[in-house]
Every structure is written in C-alpha cells, then in structure tokens.
Image (cartoon, rainbow, N blue to C red; front, side, top):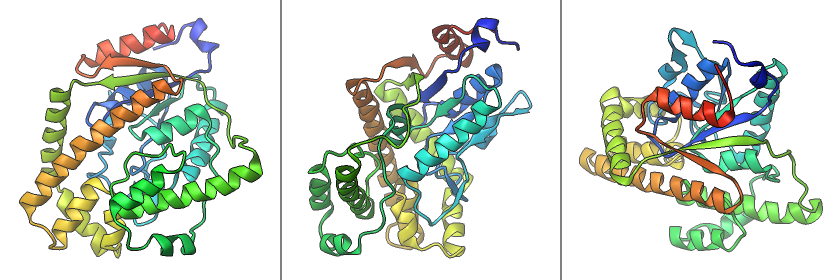
Length: 317
C-alpha cells in the first residue's frame, strides 16, 4: 500500500506500549507492514540470545502476510551478561539513525520496559556506570526491603522490574555513579529526546489477568523449563538467570531443585501479575511527567487498532 503525499513528508516515531500479554508485538509488526516501516524493541530481556520463550519474543509475529518485518534490538547480546540502560540508549539511537537514513518516515518503538521507552522519549542523561566493589561490599547482606529503601533515597526513575536483591544493588550502583557524574556534567543530556506519538494498549484488570495466565500456561507447554535447562547446560550460572527475574528466576529455582513445580507455577503467575501492574503504574507516571498517551482497547480487532493509530497520525493508505 502507498502512503499519501502528506505522510511522505513527515518524520515521526510511533511508540506502542502496554502491559505484558497485551499484544504489542503483533500490533507493531502489522503497523510496520502497512507503513513499510521497521520495529525497534524496548524490552530489557529480549536483547538476550537463547532467552526466547521466557521473554515472549514471539518472532513469528514479525512475519505478516508472508513478509518479514525488520526488527531491531532483539538477540543482540549473549544470555548471562547484563545489558543496561546506557547501552540501550546507545543502541536505540544507532538503530533509529540507520532506519531513518534509509528514508523510513515512521519508525516504530514497541515494548513494555517503561524505563527504556521513557529514556528515549525524554532524553535521559545516563552515563555508563562501572561496578563499584566498595559499594557492593557495604550493601552485602542487607535485606531486599533495606536495599529498596536505600534505592528510593535517590531521585530515581528506575523503580520497575527490580525483583531481586542483585538488581536493586545494581540500580543503587548506577544511581550513586549518576549522582557523582551529574555534578560534573551539569545535567547535560547525552541524547536528544525523540518526538513520538505514544499509544498504550489498555486492558481492564480481569481481561489482563486471564491473558497473562493463559500465556503462562502456553509457555510452560512450549518448553520454558527445557529452555532454562539448556541455558544452564550451556554454562550460564543459576545466579545469572535468577538475576533476570520473573520466568527465569522461578523456573531456575524449580530446575535446580529449590522449589517444586506447583510452587514455581503459582509464584511465577503471581509475579507476572504484579509485574503487569507495575508496568501500568509506570505508564501512568509517564503522563504525570509530561508525556501524552493515547489509550487503545487491547481487545479491539487488529484492523480497528490500526485504523485508530493511522487516524491519529493523519496517515492515509
């Protein structure tokens, strides 16, 4: 399909966010198909190779009517490593520049990691924080609640997806480095904010819970346990997988014999529901911080969702 001449003159990113299991990937890919565009992922765990089922990459969604939709920032680093927000900002801007340099007018940013999305839309000043062994030693042995209280003593944006002590310690480490860095840099942004029209897929609570529960069962049936076993067999430590939280935390605990299957499934389901709630809290916070979200009912037919987005963008096909 051809874009109208009015659209051809525009350069404007489209951002699609929403809680887990709301259908972001399928919508982004279908929209990219109609616009002749490409998708940049904003998911903090889909960057890792070999972590496919647990992160819900759903790569089959990137084939629409037989056409492969180009995607970016998925499978870009090995499992077991720790990708960070500084690296995401850098890699996003490399991908964005590549896409727009080829004449694509509406790149699509899609994902559920609110911090990644907001770092792009608002141009956060984020230095690359090295490990601080002295700080880590001081924090060693503190409880999760104590660590969380320390983190919240900073003026911190990153309050989501921190469900292990390791992740909270790393967040404290980053905040402490940022505090020192910003005193020297006077708060200058590393990257310009990227203008975008933002669409948020919305689900009422019970529908969201059902989608999450159904998808978790599918993932367990598709071999999520085997995926974790394979990652462990490849030499990745249990601690490294637990660091990623959610599926990889609870399935690793099960595979290593620390909990039984029933406990794993029950606790994982609770954790994902809590995670989805935190995601929506983050997205609403984006509005309080000055960004405009256009909400779309996630249960609408795909063509209706596409039409709403195109109408808002003023795009004619």
